[in-house]
Length: 328
Image 1 (cartoon, rainbow, N blue to C red):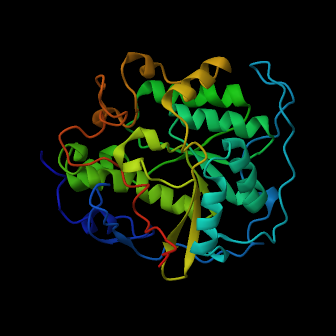
Image 2: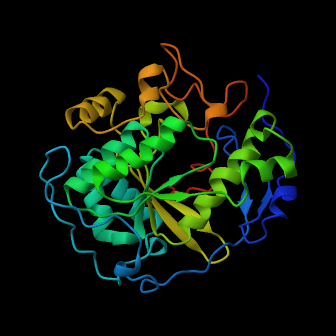
């Protein structure tokens, strides 16, 4: 099976100097190697972004469009709450064990109490992410919510964002690349995803996400262990080295890690949450249109991504080194 190209990423990044520069290597999510990135943001202080200055969901009404009664927004914790860098690998390991089999609601509640609006939910509108948004809103946990808009999404995905904003009653921030698809083609050749999907994902996903994480202490995802072999061992609470220069870390929380695909879809139907209609057409994992196909029975959920390449992740979940508490 052919692999992604090894061509250097430096040519593109020279055109976008204000981004964190990718220094070396490629990351296909399979090799275990994470590319190094230059320092991109300063070490924040706990008071550098007051809760009322953080963009996020509007205060919800008590009754939603689906008829469910929901709690009002919980008050954000004090700005003096610890940053991710104050959590040691040993402490995170203990927290992961503590929350390993706890309900997703309890895990989200912990993240809010620990970080308030310095924790944000990132979603690509897969089923688990939609469940997580609903669980958070039901509890009055007004996390900021963002998504990566690569400019290559299916029209159905773009339309779903507006449906979800109407359904939940809050806005979802779109993170966009510095380069349009056309500008990327001018620099790297047309249809970069066909010959170097790693570089394409870096430009359109990894770098916009990295800029966003500069403002956060905690990133909440909808990853599930059942999705693929590469995700089978994810923790519920993890710690990553975000910026080696400043020593800044970021906590990654995966509240949906233990959920099955069946449980996710039972929840979506029960609560009548809008979802991507492509899910009913054989697309079990939906990313950018050029790199997503329908999957057959017996395949991993994510088998329809990057067909023809030795690539199983876009890079957003693999570009940071995980900090591990080694036990001897």
